Amino acid sequence: MRTRKLLIHLLLLAGSVIMLFPLWWMFVISLSTPGEASAAAAGTEALQVIPRTLEWGNYAEALSRMGSGARWQGFLDALANTVVITALSVLGQLFSCSLVGYAFARLRFRGRTGLFVLMLSTMMLPAQVTMVPTFILFRWFGWIDTMLPLVVPALFGTAFYIFMFRQFFSQIPEALVEAARIDGCGYFTIWWRIMLPLCRPVIAITAVFTFIFAWNDFLGPLIYLQSEDQMTLAIALNAFKNQYGDFRDMHLLMAASIVTMVPCIVLFFVAQKQLVGGLQLGAVKG
Image (cartoon, rainbow, N blue to C red; front, side):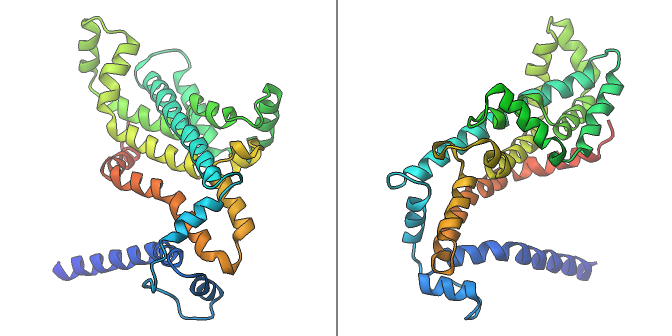
C-alpha cells in the first residue's frame, strides 16, 4: 500500500512538473537579457532552467511598449477595459445563471422539462455556428466597437452554469424553503437570502471560469472592438507580439505574457478549495 501511494505521488509530481515547466520557462526568459532570450528561443544554446540574470526591468519596458500613446498609457487602457468587461461578465453570469437555475429547480410551470432539455441542447452548438448571426444582430443594434457585445450575453446565462446551479438548488431540503415561505418570503427573497448563501461552491466555479474566459478572450474583442482605446489585454498582447515578436525581443514578449496571466493564476489559487468543491457537483444526481 505504501509503495502504491509513493508511486501515485511520484506520477502526480512528474505530471505537475511537466505542466508547470512551460510557465517556468516563460518566467526564466522574461528575466533574461536580449541575447540570452534570443539564443534560447532560437535553440542555439541549451534550454535555460534557472535564470542566469534577473532583469526585472524587462517587465517595465514590456508594459511601456504595449499599445500606443504615452508611456504605460496603452497598457493601463487595455487593463481598465479588460477589468470592466470581466467584472460585468462575472456579475452578469452569476445573476442570470443563479436565477434561471433556481427557477428550473424550485418553480413548477408547464413545459419546464422541455425548456430545460432545450437549454442543455444549446451546449452542443459550436460557437462558430452562431458567430456570424450574432455579429449581424449586434451590428443592427449599433453595438460594434463598444463593450456591449462582450457584456450583454452574460446577462442571459450559460447552459453549463445554469445546469450546475439547478443541480445544487435541487439538493437543498424543501423544508428550508417551506419555512421561508411561512415567514412571508417570496421567490426572489428565498433566492437572495436562502439559496445564494448556500451555493458558494457553484458561485466560486462560475465566477472563476467566467473570469478566466473573459480575461483571456481574444476572438470576441477582435471581432467587436476596433478602436485602440477599446482594446483589451489579449488584443494588446497580440499587437505587441506582431510588433516585437522576433527573437531579439522575446524577453519582452514573455514578460508581457506573464503579466497578463498573473490575475488568473492568483484567482485560481485563492478559490482553489471552492473550485474543487464546485467541480464535484456535476456528478451529483439532481
